[in-house]
Image (cartoon, rainbow, N blue to C red):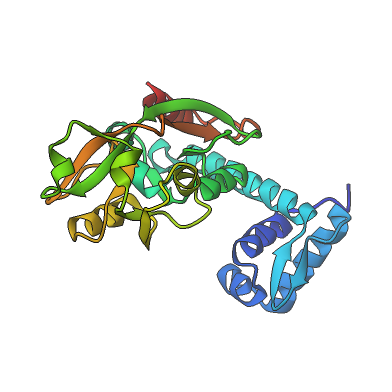
Length: 282
């Protein structure tokens, strides 16, 4: 047991894992670089495996380092929760939610508003992969994302199933139509997400050959503003709110999109997390 990691070593490694830079981590911990390096070295000896390695000009965590960082964050969070609970119920660390920009703007508002009236809430804006990664790493208590299939290591439940709409300028003849389909995109300039994004992958499977990609851009708000400027049309989630000068026309051909809430079942469940989970899925 004499070689077991101590809290100072775990705390130092948790901060180092966030920065992956000895200078920045030492500054955040108010330590000298040699003192930080000693703590990391002793932790590596206690774990029995290298925790990080050099990759080009930077540093990356090894598999053992990733596992140790997750454990260190959980220990730090549990100790922080315990300390705050002993001081004052109202001073506990906030519950951290991770979600994408579109879900935060158009889907989750009512649930988050109800939760924030009773509990402190911290929000991280991430894409689906980043949300899954942060929840698994212990950086967020819960996350909301659209990813098929769902992350296998995380518990998940449906938040909402949404359809799609074609965003067109209000002056466009399609704006008067009750619905649109792939054939209506022939010869059009289309605004799409960057290559590799899940929505882009789905679009590429169906787009007519004569559709021209006008812009590759991430995020529904900016996409809709470009539609308003007349740059092109875009297929967006039907929960989006159209800005002035844009009309959303129901679009068939892509089915629906599932948004789920995820959490790590290995973490001790804070009652506030259960409250947020219920509000998101209720």
